[in-house]
Length: 221
Image (cartoon, rainbow, N blue to C red; front, side, top):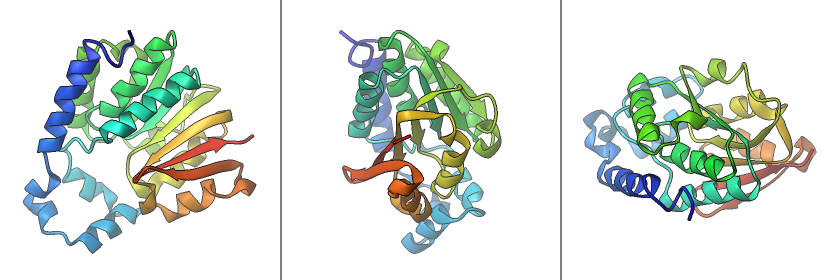
């Protein structure tokens, strides 16, 4: 028995994943009109991403089911007690991480989301899953919200927000990462600058692509 595979979290996640599978951003005419090349440019841009992600505020932009389970497994196996997440969206990845904290005996998960409507959806989902007490949702620009009041030691960092900001968010959290801390970056291919950093042992990381859309890294020292 564990929090992830039992009620209320398990049936809640099943519903949320089904809703995410049925909700395509291409249903938004503004997004459908953007070419694949332009979408990629917007995701890599450090200045134009806000409008792009604003158009996606009604879509969950969830991690895959497999990535969700991976997050739970990594947090459990590392006995994580302090987790930072960039990009809450509707809280699907947050539920997996909070479930791990619950099964680890407690802890603190700080997550950041700049869309107010998504913050409300995530808060409701976390409350329905019975894990809201473990989560602090910070609303606003993560460059500000994650620049202050972080735990002295962070065990796991999830990057799943605006891809262009991955290097900046890593820089904010880096001094808090304990040796052996794990960093999971979703769709990191859209951030070459980030990949160059974590794939360089000289920078203090060991990293490899995991599955099709995840970069898994460990802080060496």
